[in-house]
Length: 140
Length: 357
Picture 1: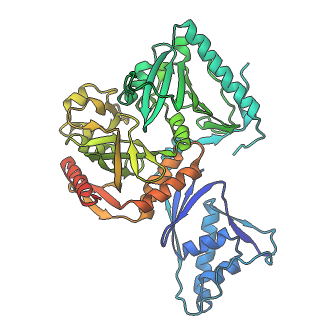
Picture 2 (picture 1 turned 90 degrees about the vertical axis):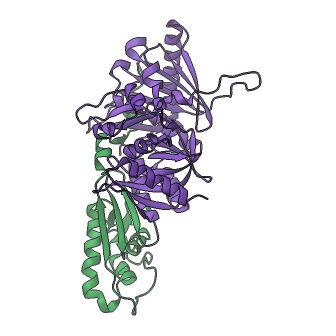
Picture 3 (picture 1 turned 30 degrees about the horizontal axis):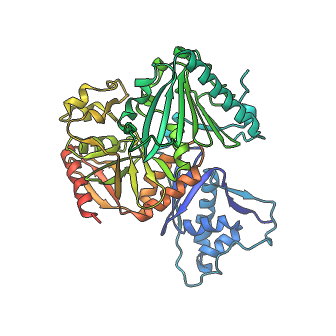
């Protein structure tokens, strides 16, 4: 069973620009910029890709020894920041998350994750906590 | 997130009970004071029980007062009706406070059966909005209302309501002249208010220094909401507009900005609305000179979206979509702010001139 990666959709808002993905974590007050091969990895994660499918999509086979550790570290960072989750219960034959086949001719582009914390204070000053009816007492 | 089973019946009953309390107490106190406003071209009515809240809650909204109805122009049916009170001066009971496990400072937010409700323990403000455009705002004591609530009253209710009106309340400033303007994005401390002040004191129009309403779709327009402007002592000392200063809502204290009313300025004016001809990403520079550079849509989104979304309870995906479209439609620039306020004004005047349609 291979792990499939997925966005933590309930916690984030994200948008893709030309060569950059901006991800906003609504719970911790941090936002992120994904560049290099980051946007392709992000898109593959959105399709529920496995590690192998992600590597196939963004790392040329000839550069796998350099590219794989960088992609692994990038995925780990996304998980640590609460943006992505790894689900080990899905069999790797469910669906292919790779956008294209291996790119023999493509140069290795490493993923870059930049984290911004300058607005964190704003959220921490007035954090928002969703409650259900049970948390809201009826008027006596 | 503590999402639980919800029942619309409970929410509506709670809202109706609060409305009934307001009407009962308002009738005991004499008729509620009624104010007609026009917000982003939409008619709004605010009912205040008792006089305590009038200046505190409406001070920065006075500039939006609707024209007195006449035979030729009768009063419009309001799209939003807000009923507001404080418990200390009216005795009207406050809506029940939710139980939140964990953080004592967290804003409790509930969305259920069309009702949106929030309680902010830091300001003590209850906000409720039920369809179609019926709202309740309540706090324990008007006298203890924090300065930031007086500078930007009813913000949570306006935020929710705007999203239903194809508009969005954004954390940004807007300045311009002759109806054409720029949106100035940036989080806390980026220089939005200083930039607005720099332009206002040189006679420009300002639609807000911290919050403005933007249209969710073209034509891109920023509508004024609050006439308050928050300034640090350094900005106040830089060739201040004396008339505006003399009527300060609150003086600066350690770590807290002064709040002024832009409507009192003799130099500039509060604009009802401005076109958004460009979006400027403000950041404080190191030199005296203000520098303008091209910016990408991604840079503009990073300056505008997180800070707007973090201040918003609910409908955040909708807000992100509106902002995503906006930064792709309008030209974006970075505004590296210099210490010379006249230079800030001249840089912005130059941008408006260059991006003229």
